[in-house]
Image (cartoon, rainbow, N blue to C red; front, side, top):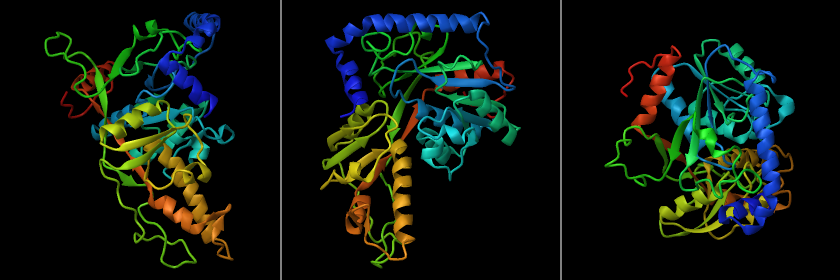
Length: 386
């Protein structure tokens, strides 16, 4: 188990030893405050983009449902004819090759796993770079007609000025001990929520507001799991000397009540495992650090049962398997092993790999809020129904 996973688990159970780190959290909070004031007073330089910027982020370490939210917003804006683009720092990618535009052919190892997923699912114009100004310039140069840019996870990047901020709060996970890093898992104090638009990520029907005057104002979202998909719908050829594409070796989709391996390298893997259990699966949970770069050995150790992974992990694992396939297919000697693994083992692994996609379902109030915010920036949403 990695150090990151151990610390994440300690945060979740609020381990007592974390309080020994409280002085470090105080120092971290002081640094945050000084940094914020420096930007507020103009002592630190910030960048104003030529078009409106909408930042989507969170104040906690780990996943909150931010990426599905971004894809839902992109889909909504595209449907209503608003030219929108996305930028990201491209975490997990190769910063030496940035700034870079993200395409459906981009490798996660170059642009990052989340950008690869966002573009593959939405086709949105997107650029990545740790320097957000360079990412924006690259994106606008390639797509000069954009009216809005959504910044993925740039909430604490105060060098970038923003017009709209949406902060995602995972209601189920909450704020733990309420302490800043490293005692708790807060990146910023909870007071940071006061001046931003807060989207409450909660389980469907988990928040009863039937008698509340705020029922139409509360901005909520939940994640809706879709049907399981084979990671590689077409597998191995009947020709033992090649790896041509065919569907003859497709695996059998696991059904509710069956035993599965849940493998997840996202910020909050417990949510993924809970989702699988909610679908009726008996789950052997295997958490990995966020943005984990999987290898064949990681997956081949989980035998006998189907392996279910997240969409975010799937983009990296597909790239890994594509490299394996290309290596074997292009080998003049048609070797039957890859890095010591038998071809039959690899075929059996691929047949057991399944992806559970999820999509963000937003309350009507979220879209009403978005429409009003964009109208305030001079961006009209055509044919809006909210």
